[in-house]
Length: 132
Image (cartoon, rainbow, N blue to C red; front, side, top):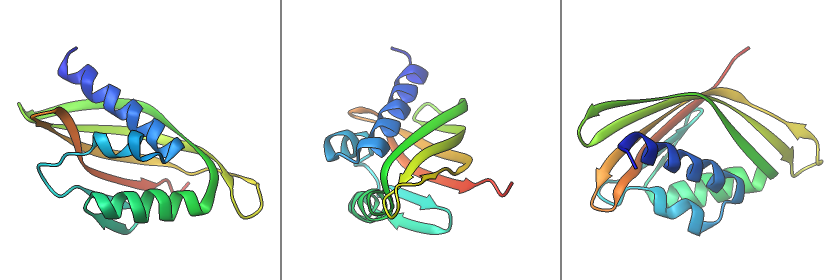
């Protein structure tokens, strides 16, 4: 499997993890050689514990009874032999936990991947909403 294919497979696992919020889907994709960071529309989560507990379980699971993340127009750019940037447009199909109504957001996401002893792993995520 090429480096690009491995990174795209990790993106698919990230998408699956956002849907399931299961630790076995979410935790293995992150780099342990650094302190990972996730920035979500103005909120910053530092470290895997915060990303999983506060973002994945706290923000996503508390707000949505289901969420599907859809990635579009994905590009991978290698900035060195051990660092890659993945950028994609996204939208979500969600069911709000509060009243079971449909909800969606759309925007652009950037992910930074590092080559580790265990292969490519996610080190940084930042996404924002479209204003239109």
